[in-house]
Image 1 (cartoon, rainbow, N blue to C red):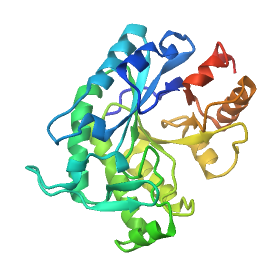
Image 2: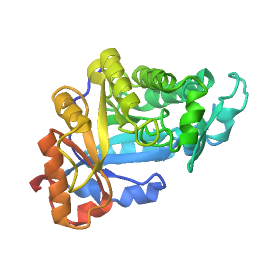
Image 3: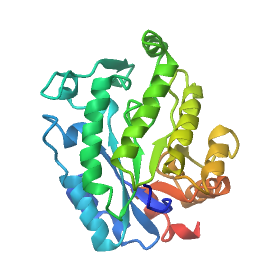
Length: 298
């Protein structure tokens, strides 16, 4: 049962290529205005060779640093095109996953394939067993339904056709809801967030909206969304803004900066827009921390 508070504050967003040395030295640990560190990893880094061998060293290091400095942390492990090669191969646990090719991004496990979901579930349960009860783990980002860290799936008309050939957007929507359920089972105590993305090309987000509604019905306040495009010209209207505003009192929601801010004014204007919409959670880049001495004054 969900037992942790809604994530709030400023989280320093780390690169997926981070090393333990890099994250140990990052400025966010020493900044009183930074609530925590948002880490990103690839699945094929944690499980490069088989379904039974895990390398948790980076997350373990971050968890230890969070205790040392009295900070929180969040976890995003990218499935999608970052899935290890063994996921597509038969093994002691059963058959491998079928593939879906995303234009310009590469090959990923088909999100609806039961063999993928079985192996993703095994991985998530192992990760949840290690970290769900950790009071410093603030939230977990859901992946596997898109090619990367967001829910974005098809990147061309050819991709749309590939999806249509297996049943169309409803197949993807059902996979999205099932994958969120895998996370709910693995992280029963920790808030879960999906990064907004369009499943169909060109930037057609209706399937994401449908899946979000189904997840809110099925998983309640355990589930929320995050917009990864916050910038000084972000709109305060439209579905994403209104959904974040409506969910913010009860569900985990937030924003990630679209890119590193050019100036302190740009950063301040971006945060003001996010706060106007109703968000209390912001992922900012390491370079953003150099622009201002106290993010909470923005």
